[in-house]
Each structure stands twice: as C-alpha cells, then as structure tokens.
Amino acid sequence: MIYLDNAATTKPNEDVIQSYIQMNTQYFFNPNSPHTAGVKIAHLIDKARDNIKQYLNLNDKFDIIFTSGATESNNIALQGMAQAKKRFGKTILTTKIEHPSVLETMRALEEQGFNLQYISTLENGKLDITSLKKLLNDDVVLVTCMHVNNIMGQIQPIEEISNILKDYPKVHFHVDGVQGFGKVNLNINLVDSYSLSAHKFHGLKGSGILAFKQAKTIQPIIFGGGQEYGIRSGTVNAPVNIALTKAMRQMNAQMDSNIKLLTEKGKEIRQFIDQYEGVLINSPIDAAPYILNVSFPGVKGEVLVNAFSKYEIYLSTTSACSSKKSSHNETLKAMGLSNIIIEGSIRISIAPDLTNEQIEAFKDAFDKVYNEVKELLKYEL
Image (cartoon, rainbow, N blue to C red; front, side, top):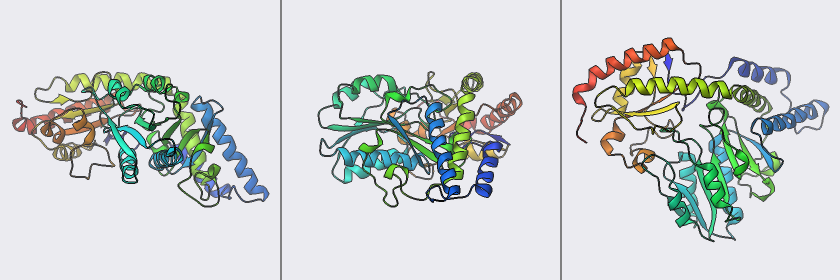
C-alpha cells in the first residue's frame, strides 16, 4: 500500500498510541476530581499546555484550549468572537477557499444577522490583499483564513494580513493552521487564535487545540462545568490530550527534516507529472510541496481515485470533509478553474516517511493510469 492522502489524515505514531493506552490504563482519573489522583492528572494537563506553548513558540498572552479537533476549535473561535464583538460591529470577512468548518460557520453567522463578505482569491490561490484592504472598515470585527490550503497547498500571507490588521485593533484574526504545523514555519503570535487537529500530524483522531490570545475575551458557545477556562465545558480527555502533546513534540522536533524531505519528494513528484501531455497541475509552484492538486480534464476524479486504488495507491479527489458533496470544489472555483478541470482533479498529499521505492511505484502506476485514460483527455479547454 502507498498512502498519498495525508491531507485527509495521517498514520498515528506508535509511541503516541502507546502513550494514549498507558494514560487510559494507569492514569484514567478525572483531572477535575479533588482527590490526589485527580490533582496529579490536572498537573499533567497544565504541563502539557505549557509544552504546547513552547512547541508553538507562543508568548504569555496565549492560552491553550483542548478540543476534539480543528472543526470544534474553528467553531468556538469564530462563533465565540463574533458574538463577543457584535456590539462593536457586524461585518465578518473570510475567503471562499476555506475548510467547510470555517465556511459553514461563517455562513451560519450570516444567517444570524452578521454581514459576511468574501475576500477575493487570486488565480494562484492566494488571498487578494487588495480586496482585503477594500473590505476593511470600522464595522469589521472578525477576519479568518487558513495558513496552508487543504486542496492545493497554497500558503497564505499571514504576516502581511496581520500587519494590515494592526490598523484595525478591534478585529479578531483567526487562522486555521491544520495543514501547516510542523511543515511550514509561522509566527503564530501574529494572530489572535489558531486551530489544530492532532490527526493531521500523526496524532489521534478526535483531539485538537485552540490557541487563543486573551481567552477571557471570548464568549463561550458550550456550557457546563466550566472546564478549559469556561470555553469548552465537559470532562477533560486527559489521555488524548497527553497523546496530542507527544505528537506535537515529535512533529516540532522534526520540522527542519520534514521541510527538507517534503520539498525534495514533492518536487520530484511534481516534475514527473509535469511531463504528461494533457495533465494539468493546479497547485501553484510556490505552494506547500506536500499537497499537489492535479487534473485530468475529461476524466472524473472519482474514476481516477478508483484507478489508482487498483494498484493499492490511495489518494483523494478534494477534502475528505466535502468530497461527498455534489457541488464543485469551492477552492478550485475561486481560483477561476473551469468545471471540467475541477471535475477531473485529484489530490496527492505526502508525508516525510514516503520512501524512494514508493515514489517509483507511484510513478509506474501513474503511467499505467495515464495510458488507460489518455484518450479521454480534453486538451482544448
């Protein structure tokens, strides 16, 4: 098996799994219980928060809130801050290339009376800074965009956006960091909140974090026992939070190596595919090298996924969170690509442990699939 769908989820590291098992068997106590065992686990959780702040190089203004993943983190940040700031303004800004957990949350806020405005997207998949500047005014209270796009890998200009927003101090700037952590450098102190999912960096599914600057400013959207600074009530899942911290430590320690390996392997795959007539590479050349969006115009993406599966090569069409929807992918549409290109697109997303032998096997399978479908390719678009 050759797994090329790492943007959807990654394989958990074995010692992360073992950490989770050990916590569940030996340290299963509730950290909110007043007895000695509960207090001990509470200290472990506090230590985990401190470690995460170190891994993310965060300053003391940030708090770490444990969640079930980035979907929940995005919802908490966007809904909570929109409600907290609505007395100051009703306009919220995002792009059409966001993950559904952001787009659908923003659309739900629009139905609640907020003024949702979309920042334009350039043909290279980057947020249009000129469009952002035109949309900014005294009524804007919330701006959100992702760091690395999950469909085609483009890296957004977070630092430039942050500098622009300095002139709008009441704006909360939230960044979905899911696809970038451990693979693309980012000064997270430039943003107001930042979300991650553990299963995107070889941790476990069902765990994530929300790094939040001045957590007391957010309005909770989940109510209960007051856990997680009162922002995310519910019994703290200590085993999964400790396992997440271990996965973050490993990913952070290997960042330089990851960047080097992903750049080399991604470049090799891109150069190989670029030789094939009629096949289009949708990912911009300056995108993150580990996510590559490719189109076979005239062939359905689902057909291609099935064709590669015959060779035990597993890749994807678009986001695993939206691939079952019938509508065309919003990211590729926002980049101005035609329907035929979008319908024929697949996503290849790699991890650092992809071997040279696996790359060669992928190349061989790619050539076979290409020859199976090349007569269907439409060269005039």
